[in-house]
Length: 620
Image (cartoon, rainbow, N blue to C red; front, top):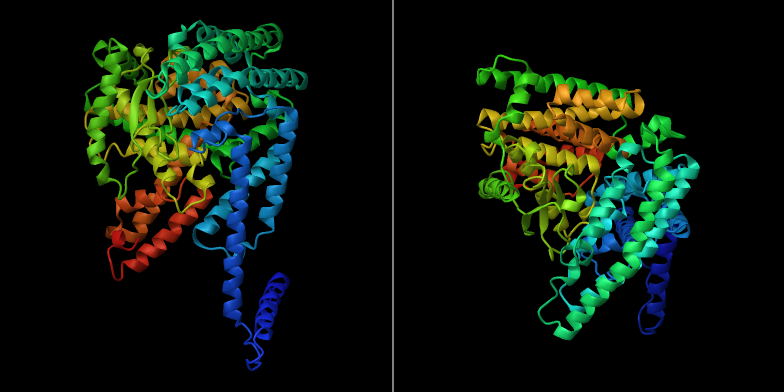
């Protein structure tokens, strides 16, 4: 057997060290060292390569923590709590160089000797790194920094609201971040102007909401200002004079530095961007937009699908779901059309709360029904707690419910954020599936469990792969059947309508960005086919426009997980165990869907083998 050159050198070094040791003992009888067997050499090389690969991943992770301090804080790394991300052109250039270097290093790993979680990590890391480098072909993507759904006017307040303050030093770190905000906002203004130069300005219906978001943020009284949240509940052991000094300085920085920076951003949006903002935000209308959308689809779905294929999947799913909705209508004796049925349920006062506190209490009641039953679905549950809270009013009445993850070290809880303002579009029959998705067993359970997988590298414990994370959450909605949450026909309709909504996303997103659909056409489709109120459909379409392809991950990810479940059930028969299957899905962290499929295929093989001697649950 011919050994790799690098391994021959390494073994030669070992032999030389052994020879040197023998010369140090003159009384010893010289002996010819035994040559390593081919098996020993392979094992040595595999161990060495796995160690080198893990070190490469760790170095990349540490680099990202330094470059993205907000992300570091969110995952429990507090070394950079006093900093904000540098978004300057120079910093972007450094990041792109690192991405190219990291991809090159990954391609030099001897992947054939990696096994187990190392091989899973490699497949994931290589796919992720290749996508990052491919995005570098389109520098205009750096200019997509603001819309009604993203930007510093939303991100910075949210970050400060969730900033962990346990000591006086934490408060001083929060103050340092507050002081860094004017520079961070100025960097985004640079990119917005660069986007205008390159022909990439956010479309008008979304961009026009940004000035109002800024106004509402700055109009908050100091006691309710999210940018000052770290200073409103300082630890009890902070001396009174220090507490007052920190609060006064933070308020002064906000009023003298941060607020003027936000007002400058507002001025740029109103005076420079809105006058040239397009009415239609389809990717196909932007420079290189067709190719850019292909990358968005690839990044969001992790699958090799083109827009037409995704569109057809959506149409097929919509037809399947409508057949189930028809069955519900027949069950309750409704003889009108689907549109009439949806309209009746959407306007019956008995299905709506009259104030936000009642709605929050309703979600808490749903949580109390689900929590005790989770052991029916999983073998191991995460330790991180979660809470239910209202979405801040400055984010707008059109903001849908969302999940805020807890820290990776479980130092802060996860949060289900409920829209407790737009009560007229929050029917009771739509609440169960929403909570299953955003709370448990959806985002909170999956993300918190991933954080606790200490045997995995950090990039996998904290990964937010869109198609997996959203696909899991949509799959979690279907688990309401196992929990008895959809026994009532109206609640089952709520679940099916949510499914139709996600199927509609496949149709509408691809329709807008690749197939020439107008905004009005997309809105009408969601109203007619998904049963959404026109106001909700409008907000959804505008979201798809500013986040191209992001909405594709939900249904495509769910379909993949359900397909894997069916394949596993077919292969294992009555040996199939739902708890163990669900656990296997979440016990490797979020993964690209092709990698997840390989993981589950391997699990089925192990489960078949284990079935010869032990129950599947004992063979893990």
